[in-house]
Image (cartoon, rainbow, N blue to C red; front, side, top):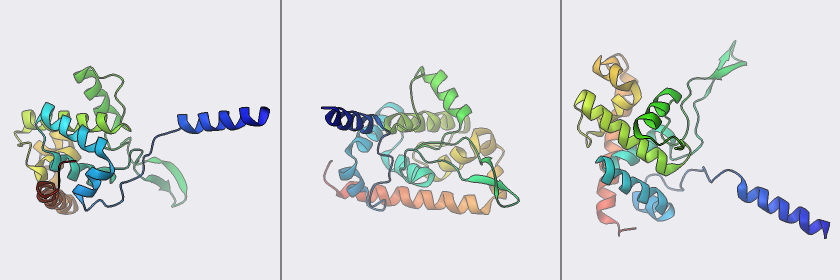
Amino acid sequence: MSRWVIVAAALLLAACGGGNFSAPRNLDDACGLARERPHYMRAMRATERRWGVPVPVQMATFYQESKFVGDARTPFRYSLGVIPMGRQSSAFGYSQAIDSTWEWYQRDTGRRSARRDRFADAADFMGWYKNETLKRNSVPLNDSRNQYLAYHEGQTGFARRSYTAKPWLIRIADQVAARAAMYEAQLATCPRV
């Protein structure tokens, strides 16, 4: 009898463990991603309805920020090349939101229990943040390139054009725009999932 109790307890602990934070299999196939993770598509469509941010823009941003990995974190910084000094920033989760911005989102929307490692919450955050960028910086919600620059630099940094000193970031923003266009074309051809 005690062996069965141990097995049951182990199964219960496994069931209560963290979620599946791994990336979908093929990140270059929007239709495949939608089939593999239908709850991602439901969440992004809900965000599109609530905040007006097109699904392909969300997908391209999630790809760039976390590759759709729910517990993604920034790399560690090292002193003398070997001594860990903490992470590069507090960015965490699907959206790679930093602590202060996530707390602002929670206060502003009243979603105190929202979590960065829950996809639906991360998608809602992204919709909210991109709407803040529209309000503060007049960047259209379907402008994936400039929305990404503001997402990365923050709305104040974007307004100051801090990205102009970062050619690597401008290249990444162009890649985000190209990926959003690719996802948009793919989603137009795949059956509704």
